[in-house]
Amino acid sequence: MKIQFVRPDLHQIDRMSADTFAVCLFEEDKPPRGLAGLLDWRLCGRLSDLLVQEQVTGRFREALLLPGYERVPTHRVCVYGLGARSEFTAARAREASWFIADSLHKLRATSFIGSLPGSPSTAVAPRARMELFLEELLRVYGHDESVGGVDAYIVEPSELHRELTDVVSIAMRKLRVIWK
Image (tube, rainbow, N blue to C red; front, side, top):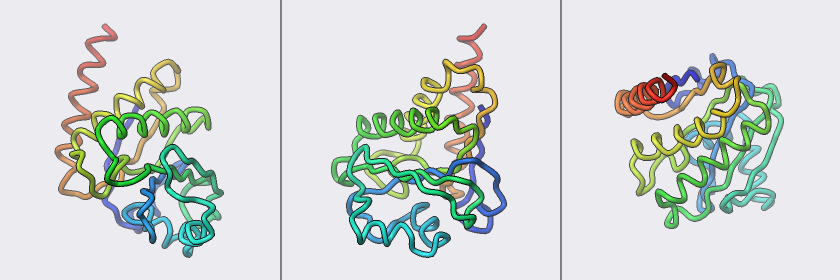
């Protein structure tokens, strides 16, 4: 598994190549925020329209699959609901991480662009969200021989990249010890 960190900048995201774009929404996110807001901008307000029409609400474990409309560097977009921001705890972050990883695996996604569940801001620290997301990705994809070929592009602010890279390095070292 290869994990790269990317700044939340449309020009950088446009240069990426992946098969799936995965974004999360809280129920209160109207209009969409963070990476979902950037995606909404790139899709000419399509997510906002779906929110207004209540075809997507941000309810916990809600999932919506959309085409990329040739407006993003992926051929499909997955939108996941996280529920109410006030109810987003570490346990909810773990369950959301598993749900997203399981969904991507069932879609046979070999590469995806997304942010950590709960971004841009929640009570759960970015380091903890990265640990939980990585654990669930490895748990879901770990039973599959194709795990080595999965590319994850995690869109988070630049000031978090060093801390999140440390989390990934530690997890990969632990994994190598287990496999020996």
